Image (tube, rainbow, N blue to C red; front, side, top):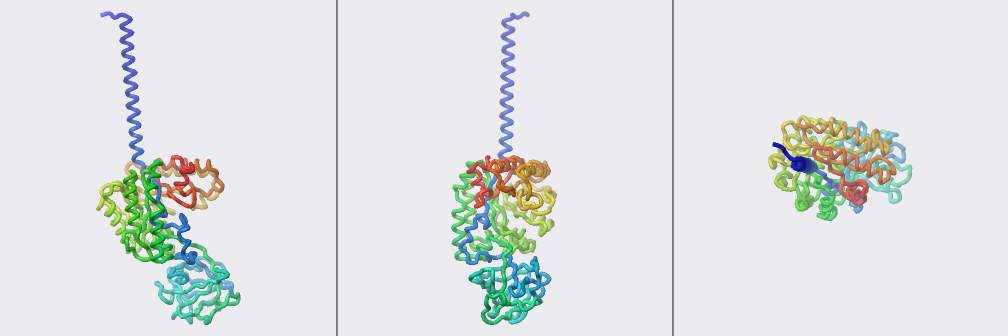
Length: 519
């Protein structure tokens, strides 16, 4: 049957219209599907900020917290060296401990360094390299050694400072005598009377402070219980508030990582010197998070005995003693407490079993055993909460935790990336070299960690700070942009360290408000 040209044109136009309409509809559907996939992926990524220095104190984040402590330069873990002003040589625990204390070294190192245990202002105990304590035999009147495994009265001294020069000190023992250096071969505790401060006095020592710690143990023991409770209560109630959760929510942050210490499980009456109150604050954080559609990762940042020797691990003196079986059991008890309390809470995203265990110092077998037990502990209370396992810091295989994750569900490996702390790699890097390092080495490492059947990956700590001096605002912006781009590819997400800090570039709040970080 024939068809007129007009009808043919009309039919062709109709067909073209239908094809175009179908194509447009398909494109729109495709775009919506693609957008939907992107949205789905974006909701799986957790853009987080750490609430560091809040429920687990780190003095460098807010140094003013320590201002009211008497002799706040002699807190627990302060490392000192003592030089006899008469002999001109340094005090040393021979063999690092288990032997006499002599005064015969010209160059101080580990055996010549003593770690303070603070009893109260002015009264201290001194721990040596092999973990024994300096002691005056028979309470004084004879030799000084370093043989005691635990300190008692004979290992407790007054350090009396020269009012005109606080580095000059006398060390008074329990019987009222003073330590003195009459001979390089042996320190004795037999100076009677009141020593003077002249250079010929064998009881006068020049004290050098070569390391300090300002963590939760130091602030609690430094202020002592009543004052510590007052100072920390004020800090916890004002440092992080609900307004901060509003700020984070308004700036695309959907998760917070909250560092806590093991003593939170004993709140409101934790073991000395820690003071109660952190659990109440954490409860508030969960309430605020739920109200403002933010998820919470609770991070066991400080473990008993210290997993890395740093102040943020709750360490008293910098030694790593977490691997003691009692400390591991206490850590698991803390995880059990946290999982039982928050496992069914709608705001809980995950529980991190341990922050930054150090290599060397923490054996991988001990760590994976603990992580396995910690996973089972969390699963007793929640079938779905993410169980987060932090990689060891220091020399370690970035995939060393992968094999133990086989067969486990909802697990995450936490990696921490800083262009800091490693002088060999970062000290002399330029702006462009730092940015290239992020886009090349870090990106390659992250890609190697993201596997189809492995654990998810969280960049649990990073910061837009480096070892570059006098970087411009534009330099910092580009550095932050590079990290946001690369770490945004992590399969679980990232967490900036930290929300608020007196050091501006470490403060997410300051960096966002001043447009150094552009989300």
